Every structure is written in C-alpha cells, then in structure tokens.
Length: 467
Image (cartoon, rainbow, N blue to C red; front, side):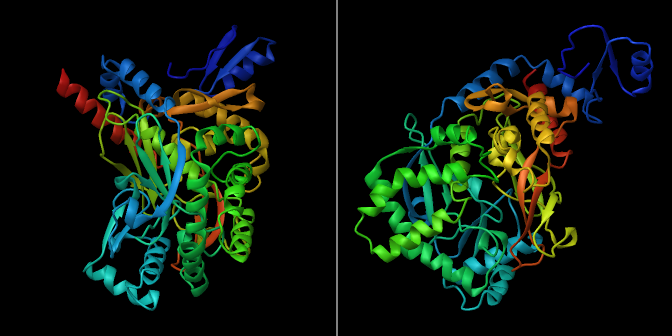
C-alpha cells in the first residue's frame, strides 16, 4: 500500500466504493483509504530509488539544510550591480527558453523591458532584436540566484531586493513588485507600464535602498512565520507581510531626506499593493531551498518554475538539470470579461513558495483568499493536509493555527509524488495569452504529472551508476 493514511482500526477499504458501501449498510465500521497506484511506468525506478542506501540520510540532510536558513533583507540595488547584467542581457522566469518558443506574456514583458532599457523607442520594434538574437540574450533567473514572478523578466536597470543568509553569506535576489493588472510581469508594455518602471528606478528603488541601509537587516523568514498566522499564505495573499515590512522601513524612509512628495508616492504605492511582499517571500524561499542543492541521493525538489511554455523542476540530487513538461492552464476566476480562452499557460518563478511549503501548500492558513482563486474553505484545509502526503517533513517556523499549529508541509519528495500520484498544489495569477494584455485572472494549477517520473528516472540512473 502506498498511502501514508493510518486508520484507527476496523475494516480498511480501498478502490471502488461499492464494497465499503455494502459494509456500511451492514453497520460495520469502515475506514476508506484514498489509494491509487503509482504513476504509470515508475515501478522499476521507484524500487531502485527506494532501496538507495544514500536516500534516507540525504533527504534528512537536505531538509535540515533548508530549515537551517534565515533570510535577511540586507539591501536594494540595480540588477547590473548585483547580478552583473549588461545591456542586452535579460533574465526570465522558469527553465531555459528560446524567443521562438516564448509565450505571449513572456514576449510582451521582453519587448517592454527592451524599451525600458532604451534599446528601442517603441516596444514593438524590439521583436526584430529578439528574433535575430543579435546583442540580446535570455537566461533563467534561477541561474543567477534570482527569482521573478510571472514572466520574471529582469533587465540591468531594474532594482532588486537582496536577501542574505547571515551564517553562510549566500544571497538571492528578486525585482520590486509593480502591483496588479497591466504590469510588465503579466506581459503588458503600454506607456503607463514603462512610466511606472521608470518611477520605480528613479524614486522607489533609491528610497528603499536608503531605508534598508539605515534600518539594518530585516528578518524576512520571521515575517513569513508571522504572516502565516495572520491570514496570508505568502503567494497570492501578502497583505500582512506588506504591512509588517512597511512598519519596519517607514521610520527610516521618513528620515531619509528624500522629497516629501516622493515619499508620499512611495507610501501610497506600497500601501495600495497587497502583493508587494511577495517579491521578498520568493527570494527568501529560494535562499533556503538552495541550501539543499547538490546532495547526492536526495529526492527533494528544490525548485518549481514556469516560463509560460514549460513547467520545470530541479531536485537536490540531480544538480542544475531541469525536468520539464508543458505548462498547464490554471483553473480559477477571471477579471472582467476575460475567460479561459484568454489565459496563457502557467508562468512564473513564484511556485518557489509552494516548493518551500507555503502558498498553495499553506492554503489552510488563508481562508480569506479562497474566493480569489476559486476555491472553498474545506478545499483549503484538505489541500494542506494532502500536501503532507508528498513532503518530507514540516516547518515549525511556519505554523498553521487552524491545523493546531501544524508546521507547513515542507520538502516535496519526488518518490512520494510518484507513489501517490498527488501533485503539488500551486496558487497562481493568470496572464493574458496575447502579448500586452496583462493579468486576466487568478486560480489554482498543478505541474504536468510527467515531470516527476522524469526526475525519478534521473535519480534512479544515478543510484544504478553507484551500485
């Protein structure tokens, strides 16, 4: 039996319900087990990985490394300074991508970023640059210790949050959040989008950089723990986290010496953007998960990311190799007159939150968000419990009050996903399929199932090579 369900006693029933129903009709106590066979074709690889002598210790080491990291906000600076990006170099969300395979929102974000960098006057003119590939390059954010929400496009002039582990000194990065609706990360590139980006470079970034330097390190990992107890799940709801960040930085901002009109704009922008903290939650999650990389024999997932065309995962035991499949369309609610035909397949590095055990994995702690993503409160409770079936442990720093302060389900195990066929649950926004549209909705999505057997096979091949 592959389920981890532990019945209290009596008769246990699996499979079709007719047998259990007949026993219940006879007044017998029946425990129903939601069991299903392993994913098709994984039997041999599961047997090899399950008997790999390295796996138990490797997974314990990976989980401990992840749990041992604290993420501190230590600065804000342009991407050209902290990531070494040069003119014409662009980062994007998800696994590696070529322009010819890029989706509408990814193309829209790249066109807008090229205009923002002054490579062209009109975003539409930038298409020829990317088609030719002359003097431009694309690279995943993950390959430069960064993460980017939705299209995740980062160009040299964009300002980045800097998150640091005080013990190891390792750092991760993420751009500043632009808000919702018509924004670059959803593929919009209209003049108002570019004007907002320039204001973020000229005013918002410098104000945050000065305030962060004057305030000193802000413990993002601790804020994440507090916000989970205040109704945020730290992916699609970051209201409490945003307010706590403002509480920490506001005194320094007021005393920074910047123009009061500019400061008023900054406060209004952050206060009106409930997703502002997401761009700190994401690099904090990546910082912790990166600590678990490169542990031979570990089956723990250390990254889930989508580029709008493909969904990819990486594991602790397989280095930087991506295992990919077609990105899925999210199931959720749409803005205005938009519908399923308007939505692009899943996109963004923000699934790093679910990889770390929050977001969709912590849905039980955020009942206020279920209507935003098209779910119900019972669904939210069941989802968090279900994610415990495919994870290695729980993160007691990030506890969930409604589940008796159960720690967030943490450390997705490729073998458990393949054994149970339970897929990770992800909360996500939905970008319009046509470049320039922006956001069309928000909902729930899962990875393509086939990427987990691919990762399992790679892990099994490595185990076989060691025998």
